[in-house]
Amino acid sequence: MSKGILISIARGIIFGAVLLPNISFGGSVTDFASGVLPIVLCILLLLVGFEIGRDTTVKEKIQKVGFRVFLFPVAAISGTFIFAAIASAIIPFSPREAMAAAGGFGWYSIAPNILMAHSTMLSAICFLHNVMRELFGIVLIPFVAKWVGYIEATALPGVAAPDVCLPIIEKATSSDIAIYAIIMGFSMGFVVPWVGVIVGV
Image 1 (tube, rainbow, N blue to C red):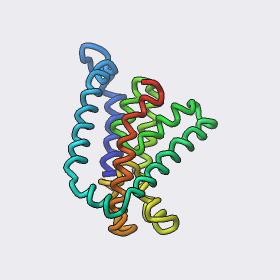
Image 2 (image 1 turned 30 degrees about the horizontal axis):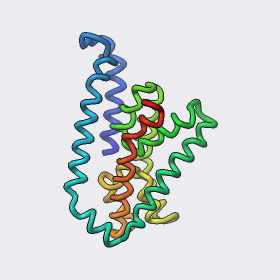
Image 3 (image 1 turned 180 degrees about the vertical axis):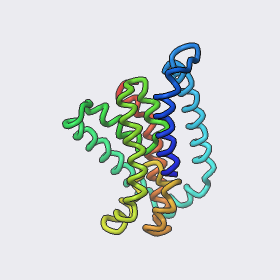
Image 4 (image 1 turned 90 degrees about the vertical axis):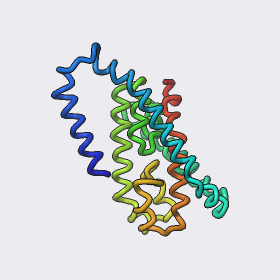
């Protein structure tokens, strides 16, 4: 998965630099992308909703663990936004823009596209941030699980915790932590579509 992400980024850069300037869609490439992206986003979010709705085991697992399981994603989400706002003091973005970029929580296919309407630069930063979050999450999960804590490790990859990174989390922690990873990922995924509201899109 990680290799596929990196290859796709490289292909996109080459395609954009070499081929796109010579291709016309009856208008600019940006205009074409702006028209297509909202449709693709809605379809993607619909499929995510189907995936969540089909998982009939989540309710049973939450009842078993207790609703305190929701406290951990609240802490992780709040911490992300707080430190992003603090980081705006040393980066060329306002606190709201920094929070929006960080608010993708690893969902590089959604958040950057939402922020495109606000700023191309912010969208690019958001994309890189979210790709790096998933990649570093994959690498660091075993270390954080060993030296910090099992539940803390579920917050690293963001929305990838319940799917791509779930086998890594279970291997580095225990099968009991799976529900924490699922709730962490779903909670962060619920917040992602709101990144546009943060910057007024």
